[in-house]
Length: 113
Image (cartoon, rainbow, N blue to C red):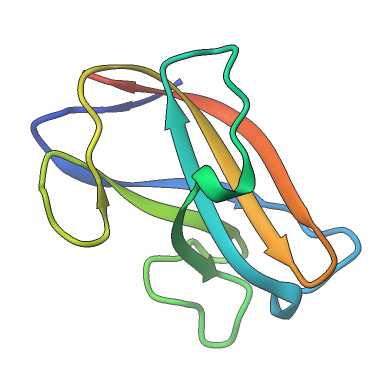
């Protein structure tokens, strides 16, 4: 379980493993957070975030070498690009969109303290 302090702002990353595609096949990535473990989001519920490619030459800024990540900022700031969450345990869902499909996964739980 990843932890974020509600009084701060930090990056939360989820690695993507591509087995039958390339990074260039990805049109967009997005995340969704819910405190209801039974809720399954629809594609339209997600908030678009950043895809960072640590396999590129040169690697993307904010990337980890060799890793492709869905990267979002979570925290207390009310500003563009920051997902503001109140304290609680959130199911974190990730959406990867390609021309052929919308891939939805729930990779982890995010605890906001």
